[in-house]
Length: 357
Image (cartoon, rainbow, N blue to C red; front, side, top):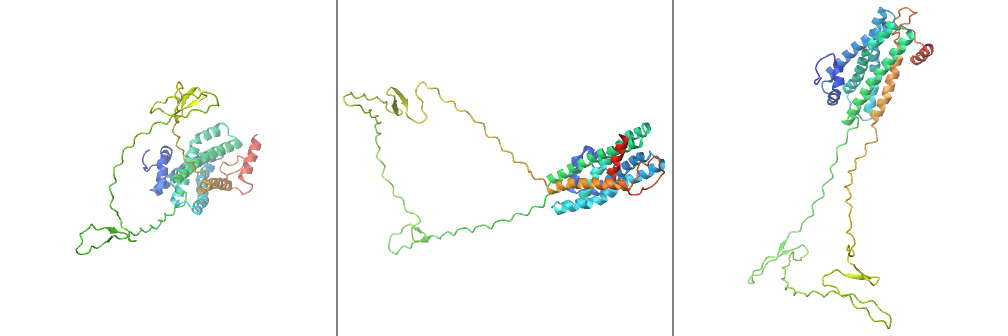
């Protein structure tokens, strides 16, 4: 689905064009309509799944669970959304209330649609294995898995907003440095010429009285210099009584040479090699690879607080679900809209696991 068209199946657009949804939230464009469609889709999906939960007890319990399950998610959102928004403001994020609400509603929509996709599986086990403990743990696992997937969408959306700089404080405008004044250039002076004297070209005089330019005097051409004869290497000193060694002839223009061990001649110039020595092989070193900029190791404070907020959202939601119980309805008890508040959700799950295994 390429466009944002009015449709109750907004989940199709979220799953197929999530980048388009993130870009719409970044641009803060038509978020009211998008949020209302996600709210309607989530309410219908959660109502269907709540009816499956309550069907374990009776039709009346199915109807009340169809109302209480969407209410559970909406009340949890109403309790936790101000905390998320104020966290972002404290740490410099530039998210509006509509953007924060749209982000959380994306997560709730994905959670509710994934839960209703598991409804046929839950209904199958309700018919084939109507055990209260197993049915309760199965649906708690389904809701937990759906919530984890939905919250991954929430973190993905926050990362997109972070890439667009909406989670970072606004950068201060750069202050331009004052321009340095240009150095003053002294004005040229013209030397006046007395009457009766031959006119001369005006000469510019500097501020200190010296002339700015001096006429160049042509230099006499230099006489050619004869090239100097190459120096003949001196013969090595000999002991008294021994004949002096004959001088070694050197060709004019040849590189200077020196005697090594009294026998071999080797070039003395830099970079020259003796005869018969192989030419050096220079290794071509590859160009140094471009150094990649080190990734920013610092995570924005808003991203860190998002994970804290997710834990808070989970704790509030589970405790509120315990307060709004029953959703399933115990088989040995009659219908009741609410139960007395005693114990907590986690202790009940541990007790159910102990009874099951």
